[in-house]
Length: 109
Image 1 (tube, rainbow, N blue to C red):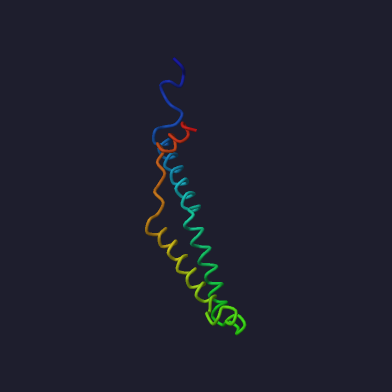
Image 2 (cartoon, helix red, strand yellow):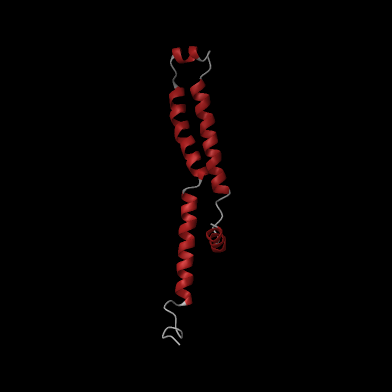
């Protein structure tokens, strides 16, 4: 019998704590890089910029678009789309990654 057979280096509680920490880090990383956050954030930022540009258009800009304030309408549409993506992320967050799923993916690879 080996010297460590009667006792383990890590207690079950330590292992469970480490697993839960890794799960929370994995979930945080998956939420951070969720495409809905990236797409929604970019649409909101660009929508604000285009809307500001469309608030006071020049006459030449209006003449090019045949009288339609295209920057204002496009900016508002971009803002709404960005808010939709961010709301979708808030209402339906990314589900946490299960350890069994990760183990199965690693075995299959």
